[in-house]
Image (tube, rainbow, N blue to C red):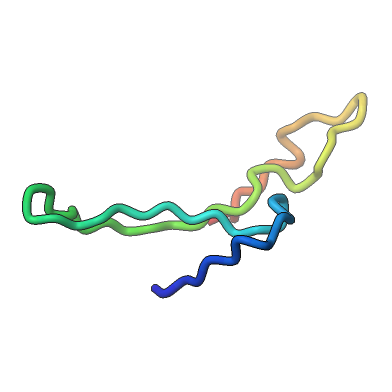
Length: 61
């Protein structure tokens, strides 16, 4: 994966956040599998009388 810094971009809400680890001889990296999960709820805000079970996103993976 490659990335480029955009220090002048101040729109933090719509900016992709990345975290990385440096590999060194003293601390080799462990292979991982990354999984992206979507929102766990299909509705942004439940109304009075809504039961959350009806809005669970079971296909978020």
